[in-house]
Image (cartoon, rainbow, N blue to C red; front, side):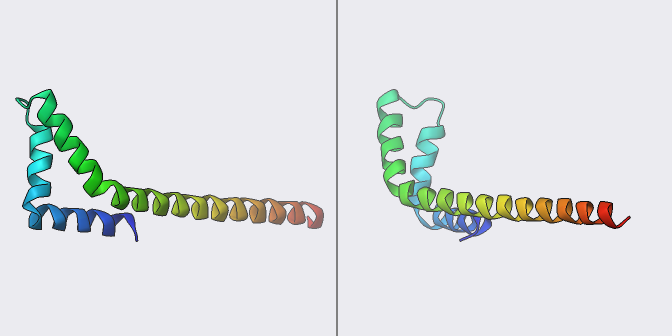
Amino acid sequence: MKGTEFLKKLTNHLFTDNNLLALFERVADPDVSCKDCSSAGVSLQFKLFFSVLFFLSTLCTMLLHLFQSFKNCNSLGREAFEVSSYVG
């Protein structure tokens, strides 16, 4: 799952799941008590934990692939430079 897909799904869940939206609104309310904020935060953690965990693992995998691609391109560029130094 790509990051944009995850954000689209989260947005859809916020529009369709009134409980999830209410939890976010309760946490963001400036007049919320510490107890209510804490209980809403725990509920949000349970609802979002696996989705966020999956998103982060996907993001890490994408970053590793990107780093590996950059590393391969960098080594290929260096080898091409070394070959052109010997030839020219």
